[in-house]
Length: 261
Image (cartoon, rainbow, N blue to C red; front, top):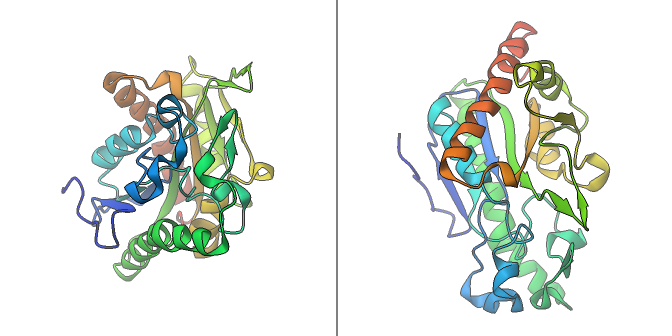
């Protein structure tokens, strides 16, 4: 398996293990805190550029381990979510936020329509195009596909501590989420909850809708509290825990007629 076999659509996206044969297609929209030089750091303070506002710490590492174990393709953004959040539509203010929680983003204030379009064209469109290309190739090859998007979240948000450790999120199609939640007793040491710490009403299921629902694929969004994935050892252990939920869920979907039935 090749670690990363494509930057063909520019530096905004990487595709890992493109030809993986697992039914799982992994996405990681907030994999990186990289800000291309043309955006002059967005005027961020160094600590803000390293914070959860700029990316989802640990998410790519967990997704990459899952990709390797499952033989699953992974599509990941290589640009900070503060330049463009690939889990938001272009018309959403949160796609290029002027403020993220307590973090001010000077470089996003007063963007012109042309500046917003440039980011949409150079970051969002390549990511979406890469996902669509992988889905089409898998369909043409006769491979079943379920969509799994990997994220992490901060343990403290607006000063409030979050008790949930693992969030299993869904939109209109809850098949995969239901099956994963049914497997949650296998992780008795974890607090696993449905549509927490965010849900559809928060606008976080954009990728599930345009890449999952629109293609008729069972889909789920996994949120991991980022204080649980601070070292390579924790990242690998968490990936194995996610597989503990995902593997029986895939079996259950297959028994019901297939993950993209």
